[in-house]
Image (cartoon, rainbow, N blue to C red; front, side):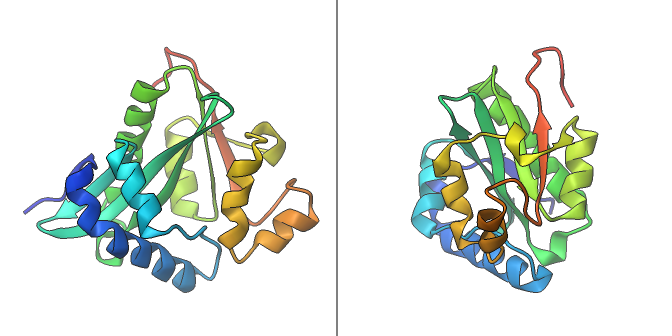
Length: 180
């Protein structure tokens, strides 16, 4: 059996709790911040067709979702998670590529960004054409930064007036001829 990577929809709502648990566990293991999301938020992303899910049989093994900011000028591919048993298998790369393509389809003129503390995600983003940038190059939408409040490192972000944190900011500038 091979993992299936696909656009999530309402049929996948049953996995929202497990996805949130995977995110929470990954945060604890890494000792770094991951913004917490509620199962209802994850279900909303699935219902909107703004999420990619990876399944192995009936088990959820990966997930990522789309969020847009500043009237669709910026798009974040957020919440990338891979079940520990499937890490270093190339699954994260498949999910990132799928969410990127879905983002380009839904938001063809947007700039894509992410913030992460994961070296593996930084490597994948770099391979896809993302460049490290300062936080000032990202959306300045307060709603985006509010999403960081549940992260253990939020105090750093506040103290630096959103100029830096432990995360690395990465940006892919829209150009319809660019494809990773």
